[in-house]
Image (tube, rainbow, N blue to C red; front, side, top):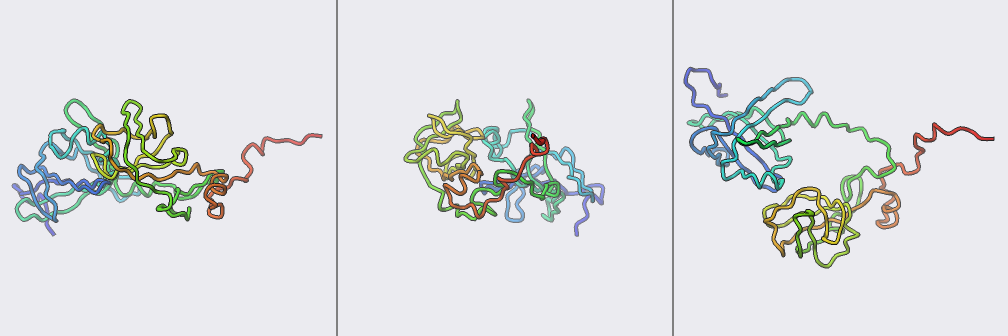
Length: 269
């Protein structure tokens, strides 16, 4: 195993790999030349440096940050604003730029990104952050299962359609599609099949005259005629589950469980 920094002059550089949710993989290195290893070309980006990385044997999430300038053509400010890097998987390590041997020192996901006058600062969450999730289900009158997900039992293909964009309003962050009943898609999802936001999942917040209002900013690069995959939505109530989908046997909630108001009641003569 390669031991780094065991000599006065070492041929070591840091590298970063970004695995976006749309399937794009990007590699960067602090070396002054591009480095190709493990099937990925790492662009020379000496302006990007890990500000701090802390690894412990504790269960608590490890801390890490990356600072850099928005100067490389592979990372653009509009791409960050469009959400292409939201929850992207991150890998940081050290590489011998002569022998190409490398070691990963940090793995996680991309968290909050802040822009300033000189560039950006990205917060990284390690894989140990998953241990902080509360896996114990809580009682609720609404269904806890994701629509067409684990526990729901319904087929996603049965409630998914593909339609072209007929209008776009960036001021209201809404998009309209042709030939569909908008009421069926409240709380649903939109995933573009082409354009600058290909593969990203948008949640439908509400419907309006301009179409679907989405939960994340739309890019002005989305063109009329762009095809998108639309998934119907569910309000997670027992009424909708039983009446609209006939799926009450898979309902993951307690709609008839008495609430805390029962404790405040008192007897009357």
